Length: 310
Image (cartoon, rainbow, N blue to C red; front, side, top):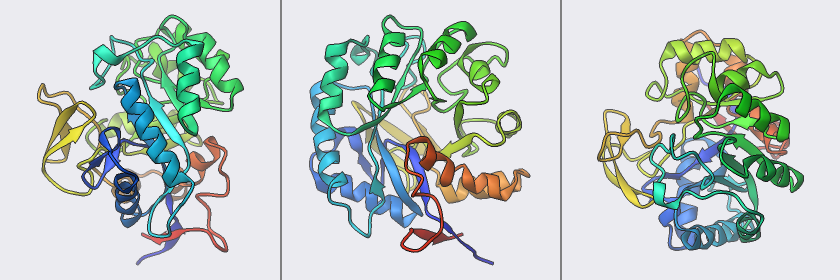
């Protein structure tokens, strides 16, 4: 049996359908990502740019902005830009190139904010200047997410106290100890949205269920999608390097996991199979992410709203 549900809202998409956003050359490349996402049920998304050369990032932000201003019916809607870096911890970079990591400053933040519609910024709260950056970005209406961080619980709480409202792919690229670090702090605070990847690759089923039990009404599911998503196995570009996809895992040449290649439909079914309440599971990839970024008009059913069948 199929049912009609709101189209998905994804807050972390690095690429899709063979296109890596950070290496996009034209607005058509951005539109290819949007079409590929829409074919998998994603109605709106945040194009996400990992750490890279600032000039390249600003060039892509301009292309994304062109597409955001002229949406098409056969594409997922661009609802802003998610900068996943460069203000990350060199101790938890994941696949982000260390040479392009930066410390935040008003000048650098100003360049990014002038480059396009920045909706979300992921940063590590323990790096120098981070707390001031969180306050500045929050005052500018940007949603700050803590991630790629080796922060202590105390440092994470300071980040949330400064205005951070969510956490990027909880447990990935951070301390996995359940009593310390960003994850522990985020789960302890009822006002913090918990973004997680539930593709069966990034986290164990046990850890997914533990997280949802701790935050049953505030977890948000993303795929952290990368260029190979929707294409199958092979080797594909990602930022300044390449990822190889094999058996559902996208990894760099050194074996480091570099993002997701699953679908939100697949994640929804996985959560339901694990016993998660279906309505809550659906909300985690529709209404909840939409509300976090101030778009409560998305992720709901209604006249003129985008919907899909699952």
